[in-house]
Length: 77
Image (tube, rainbow, N blue to C red; front, side, top):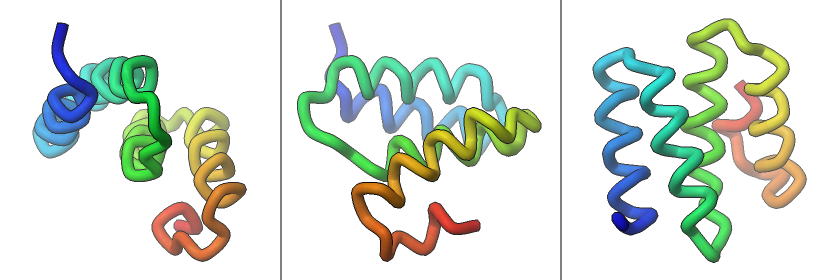
């Protein structure tokens, strides 16, 4: 089993390659394995959802980030 850091790193690689479905899978695995909240994972997953035109899922992730950190400007895009 790989660590949450591995999955977020791999998700970032897939994002750069425009392989958003794979990136989302990696970010999902990070969220399941990670015992602490990492807002960058939710932001990156939200960006993937936006690129796939899944606006409702993107909104969910960005809203979750803003509920925990209202000053996160990345979630306001």
